[in-house]
Length: 436
Image 1 (cartoon, one colour):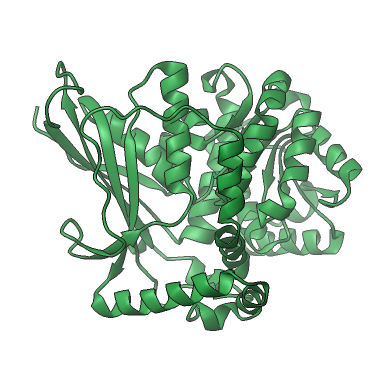
Image 2: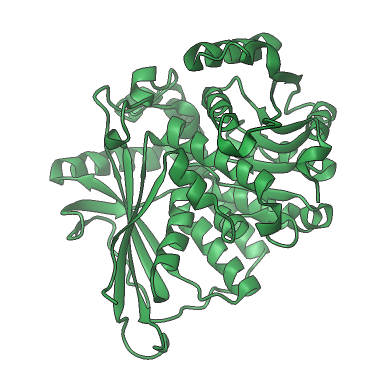
């Protein structure tokens, strides 16, 4: 396995000059000041196509963080996702590559390939199941042989959900068999806006559902066994008694990621698999009507090339201002206090008490936990991504025995990553659990 001391840099941020990349740069700089890197410090660099833009990113980070040394002490690597030799050179210098170049379905595989071939661990923040699962089927064996850890979906998609299920399981005295999560967003005083790169990933993901189904048929896996009472599926739109507002199924990668994690933990550690469903709160009936209208329009337009081009060209119009080519302002990204947390993911779990056979009878215990944090795309996501990288560097013996392509829960279930995330700003809490 590659050790951090063997490479010139422990972290290389690829795509640092992109919209998300610049926030990851700032978060890496904050992590470098943490207790875990006192003494020798953290060796890191930024990478991308344009030296001037990379220098501008470091300048902005230096100004925002009041750390002028960033302009002179941080390495700059010039490489292009379309230039394999330059990617190979970047990977040879890195212990961990933090890949911020999306959509990953178009630009992710060359970086994964270069990392695996050149012994660098890889972390992305993809929410694209087709890419994530495609990389597993294509590179898992090769990564295992090289001792390389490829960890996908390590941003808001899907660390809160994946690790939230594990946190819920570990907080229950007994056997957790099923979890439902409900995601709620809270906008700051400046409102919410996300850069259109995420919008484009969603467009292509919905349009390409057929290829995802083909991929899964091409590489069929054993179904994850259902333990305990089967979790009932909710409707397309329903009133949540738990949240006292309407909710819909969450359409992101969370369910697919959690299912992969549960399969891995069951097959490799003989742990009881947890059933999982994910939902998002949408508010009152007026919000439901608006959402239905937007959803129908989005699904219709993604079916045709000209429709997809219109969605891509005018993200602000079709998303009612939620996505834009300009992305959020600084005020929209940074809340002054954690009390202004812009997301809360609440987990309602059920299971069986200690000594009770989960294959017999109805669930006898329940638990409620939460994961909460700041703005999801440019504050929470960099925190999650960077702490995943820190965990690879600092806890190599707690990772799976072999390398491979992993979900966050599969890679980090035996580590202290939740403690790191709590210190960094993503809070994992037990809200209610059964009496002893």
